[in-house]
Length: 386
Image (cartoon, rainbow, N blue to C red):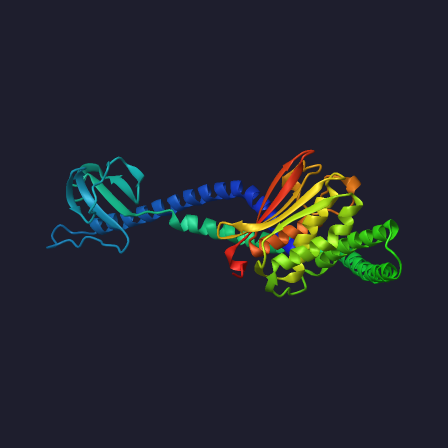
């Protein structure tokens, strides 16, 4: 995970935490705004009622007709009782005619009792309008989103500035590791070349075999470290790879290491299996599995490596008869090691997991303590070259 991804992830977490804390006050804010909205609506209804009453009071009985006030968003009417309107523009029935402000589902209405029935013998004046809290909820949602965005931006900026010293340290550490890896490669190559030259000139012995095996272990670690450093910046091109040949080549490479523990590698490999994949990534996947199988196997045991047809695809299996795995869930966590005595940095399977995710390769793990482990890889159809 790079620095920007780390900053975004933590800014998101911080935003969610702060946003969750703000939900309670925002809830009470919404309740308060609904109350204010109710009061404003009631005042508007009273204002319309006052205008109607004023208009009626100005009416002279000697006039031929009375023009009842009409409003764009409000309806009103004069009622003798609940079921007997004298004149009304309201189309819906009034639930009750008790004095005061009422809200019923999607309407609000104000009932004013008229004393002495002096307005066209009516006992009630009712003013009604459509009612909804949508505007309140919309404003609250807008406020919530604005708060989240503001908190996210501020937290990201703050975390970025706070992390600058650590980024500088990490950059120096990365450069140190890069330089170290580069420096390791040169003497490692020299050792390999000289051991090969010695074996050609003189008869191979157990000491040179041990040196050769040790350099191969170091080379495997070097490849993992090199990939870990470069994989975010290198575009790994895919190509058609003969998996069968690649597998046999890497098994041959690790044979010397296996012989140091008197481990025998049995193979059952289907010929001419081809994948569309990057060669470097495929090698890392294979190398880590063979290396781990050797590392965690008991001396004088066997490792089985199988490549066979599985339904419409191919199944690649690495089976060892060694110490087994205690916790398979933590196995792909970077720097996690179940056995510190066996060496390694705990990065190999973490890298393998990233490759599996990239190519949608399925992995099934079966393990039993003190009996061994089986790693089964099923390659999806999209990377098969049939």
